[in-house]
Image 1 (spheres, rainbow, N blue to C red):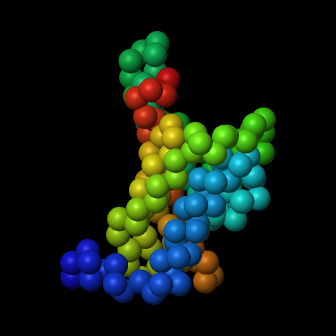
Image 2 (cartoon, one colour):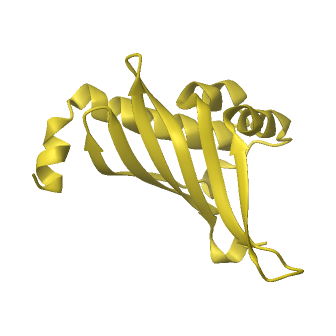
Length: 136
């Protein structure tokens, strides 16, 4: 089965719900809206990034849970200006109750695993990387 055939297997409603989960995730960040972010996440979310430790030069793994991400969004002090936002969502692959997405945002790229859980599409994994102008 080709990627095109897999994509056809998704209903329009599923495709829209997957897209909406990714947009709620991105727009929740930009809008400093923890409820919008939370509704996109599975409670067992694992969000990870690999960065370099400046002192040692070694790679390190940063990670956060759904609760930690929602708390970070809750603590944001400002809403990002509309003209500074990017939220380009691409569904890379999908099959049955699982999908892989790429979301380009203003300062980073997110790779999402989204799962249909109790009838709703939720983000369960995120691997992300800062764009070069934002690397710490």
